[in-house]
Amino acid sequence: MTQIGASSPLASAKRVVVKIGSALVADNGQARQDWLDRLASDIAFRRSTGQEVVLVSSGAIALGRGLLSADRPRKLEEKQAAAALGQPLLMAALGQAFAPHNICVAQSLLTLDDTETRRRWLNARATLETLLAAGALPVINENDSVATDEIRYGDNDRLAARVAQMISADVLILLSDIDGLYSSDPRTDSDAVHIPELTELNEAHDAMAGDSNIASDVGSGGMRTKLAAARIAWSAGCATAITIGDRQKPLQALLDGDKATWIIPALTPDKARESWLRGHLTPEGSVIVDAGAARALLSGSSLLPVGVSSVEGRFPRGAAVAVKSPDGVTIAKGVTAYSSDDIERIAGLQTDAVEATLGYRGRPAIVHRDDLVLEG
Ligand code: GLU
Image (tube, rainbow, N blue to C red):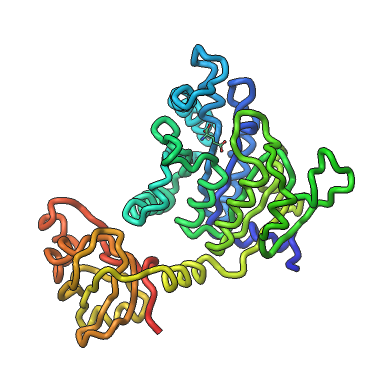
């Protein structure tokens, strides 16, 4: 078992996703500004050590519902309206909290499709990468005002895990009102034992989590959804911490070894992504590259339009493709940022000539190196 504490996965993480639940963000329809201010200085400190942080924040419905005449929104459309009213209040409160640290907050509202459909996932990821590179703090929530049941994540724990997976985060921190997983419900069983660390998750752990929601009525996650989120993160090579958010500095507390449950994955995010690409991609067509591009790919570069000579098959943007050398041998597999029709038009072009040919500015690479796995 790894020693959590000084060697907390948070200490060495490069990219961290922090999820905060509604009960932390809002109380009686008002933002908990003091707590948000403290969280902001906690996050600002992590960033000052070189870590990248993405915040997934609930609380839109909790902040907006007081502005609706219905005192407790129950119908879906009431919740959606409350979210539309509360989301700007949430961003305003976060903007106020981060302003003293000169950190700009950037709102990103996602629906299930943005992480489950590869074509859209490429877009959402590129936006988040660009925001991080610009030094902004991406603040993510579900796009509740348009997401109906069939296109909803439903809870921000899973949304946060999908985001962590999408951007290859090393650590996901789920801040809530419980300090982790217990062998049984600690509210009703005085013999319940806290579990500090797990290296896998199975049905026995789900059974320990029960299905009740310990949080108040404003959020939708309980321990079950936290474990579901941790499982998604685990398969993406991302460690998850489940812990109490209502502390002076919850991230620092986690680093100092305060009570939490850590779920530690077997692989790093890079290895997990590589194994996912290897196992899950069935090519819908091929891109034939020239000898120079083939060499560049083998040494870890992305596939640029200039290196492509031709295309085989018809496929949309976001499809899996085989990348073949001039003699027809498959050298890599990857996810394409362009459709076969567009690749035909831009094959052999320098990247800065792509926009004039296609009439839109696409991605610099046809297959980004993060979406590429070499054969063999
Ligand atoms: N997206 C919802 C909100 O902002 C919260 C969902 C959740 O609690 O997990 O109010």
